[in-house]
Amino acid sequence: MKKKTNDTLKNKSILIGLSVLCTGLIAVSFLENDAVSPIRQASGFVITPIQKGINGFGSWLSGLTDNFEDAVSLRKENEELQAKVDTLTEENTQLVQDKEELTRLRELLSLDEQYDDYEKTGARVIAKESGNWFQLFTIDKGSSDGIQKDCNVISGGGLVGIVTEVGPNWATVRSIIDDNSNVSAMVSTTSDQCIIAGDLRLIDEGSLNLVKLTDSDNKVHVGDKVVTSYISEKFLPGILIGYISELNNDSNNLTKSGYITPVVDFRHLQEVLVILQRKEYVPSDSTSSSSPDASAANAGDASDKTDVSSETQSETQSETSAAGE
Image (cartoon, rainbow, N blue to C red; front, side, top):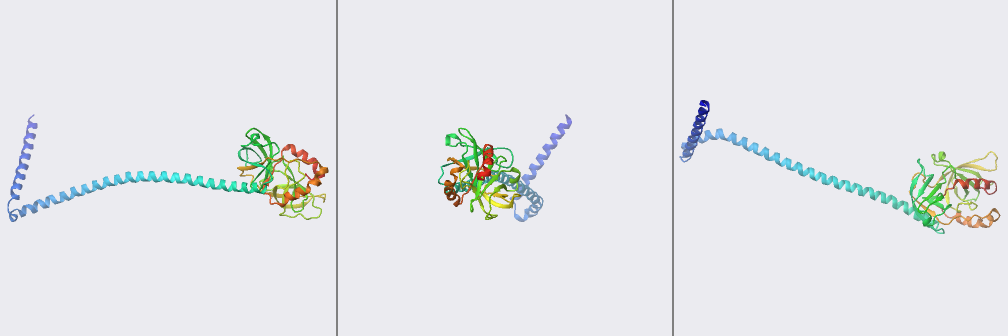
C-alpha cells in the first residue's frame, strides 16, 4: 500500500514538473527573440530529430497503405483482364472451329454441285467403331430423310462408302477402306475395269488395293484417276475414288494389280453427303447400252467416296471374271 502511494506521488511530481516546464516555455516564447534564441536552438536540436522521425514514420505508413490499396486494385484489375483473356480465347477457339467447319461445308457444296444430277442430303457423323479410321460409322440422318440401304455416300474429294443399315433418324455407313469392301471401278482415261479392295492394314500407309485391272494395251499409268464403274451393282458411275500410285503385272500376264491413293481423308470425317438416288443395276446383256452414260459421268472431275457392304462382296466377286467388278 505504501509503495502504491509512493508511485502516485512520484507520478504527480513528474506531471507537475512537466506542467511547470511547459508554462515556463510558453512564458519564454513571449520574450524577445534574442533572449529565447538559445532556448529555441536547444529545443530545436532535441525536437527536430524527433519530428523527422515522426514524419518519416508517417510517410512510410502512408506509403504502405497506398501500396496495399494499389495491390488490391491491381489484383482486381488482373482478375478482370484474365476473365477477358479467357473470353477472347474461347471466342477465338470457336471462330477457328467455325472457320474449319465453313471450309468443310464449302467443300461439300462444291461436291454437291459436281453431282447436281443426283438428289442428296447432308449428314453429320455421330459415332464410329473404335480405332483411328472411319471404316464403319453412324450418321444423324435416316429413313425419315429419304435415306435407304445401298445409298452412296460421298465427302471431301470423292467416294466414302455405302449405307448398310438404316433407322428412322440414323444410318450406318461402311467405307471403302473396310476389309469387307470391294468396289467395281475403272480407270477414267481408258475405261479399263478393276476392283478396289478395302484393307485397314494398308490404309495406314495411305493406300488401297487395286486388283484385276484389264489393261491389255498398256495405256494405264501411275497418276491416272480411278472412278466407280458403270457396271457396278451398288455404286453410281463416275464417282472419284482415288489416283493410281503403283502398278504391276500379275503372274498370269493378263491383268495388273497395284495401289491407289484415296481422295478422301478417312481419319477425319465429320460431314458427308448421302446420294438419295440408288443404282439401278442392269444385267450384263444391257451393260453395253449404258456405257455412253458411264463415260459421260467419268468425264467430269468427280470428288466423292464409296463403300460396299459385306453382302456386296460375294456378288462383286462372282461378277469379276465376266465384268471386272
